[in-house]
Amino acid sequence: MHGTGPKGILVVGIGPGLTALDVPGALTAPLLEIFSGAAKIADNDGWGPALAAVFSNVGAFPLPARSTDAALVLALASGAYTVRLTAADARPGDGLIEVYELP
Image 1 (cartoon, rainbow, N blue to C red):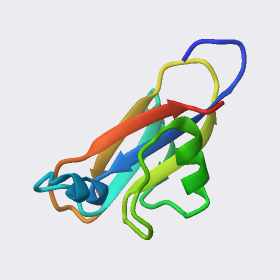
Image 2 (cartoon, rainbow, N blue to C red; image 1 turned 90 degrees about the vertical axis):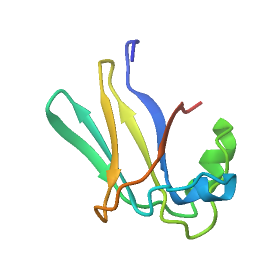
Image 3 (cartoon, rainbow, N blue to C red; image 1 turned 135 degrees about the vertical axis):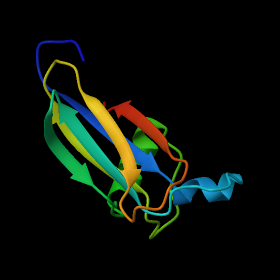
């Protein structure tokens, strides 16, 4: 990220939400982790209904209510970050990471 101040971002880790798109073998319990260098600065294995409005504001596709997909809203300073999506339940599968800048 570039700039002079922190930027708000939405990070979404989709697994179960992919099944509606006929993606076979999707992660059943995604775990999002955000790193700055080697330091983990945030993680989450779920999301709440309050984020539905944030999804809509940035053009992200909506997740099914009560899905076990993961999402985070963060304010990040300029710099390089790594997003990792793994299985919280240790079951392998396919997932999708989306990152949006908040207005």
